[in-house]
Image (cartoon, rainbow, N blue to C red; front, side, top):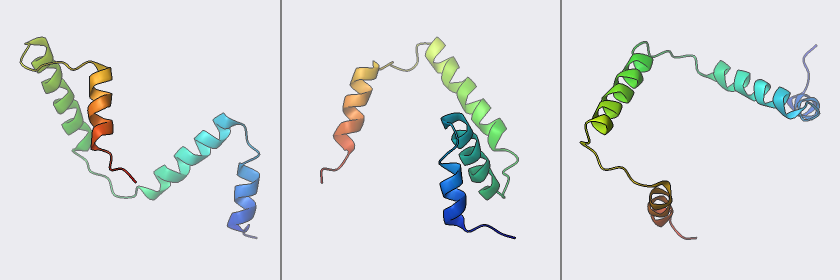
Length: 78
């Protein structure tokens, strides 16, 4: 017999934070049915490229406080 989603949610909310996080992760992963075979390698390649640029001094590093200020400046006001 299938449980009502509202009942499942009620039960899930009784789990400890680690259990809720694991359940949420599993549910989200179950929605991602399409696999991009090259995505992981593409991200690894991009990370390596950016690390090489940093090591070579080819890019200017921005302190977190400045990056955060710039990001918040882009958020539209309500």
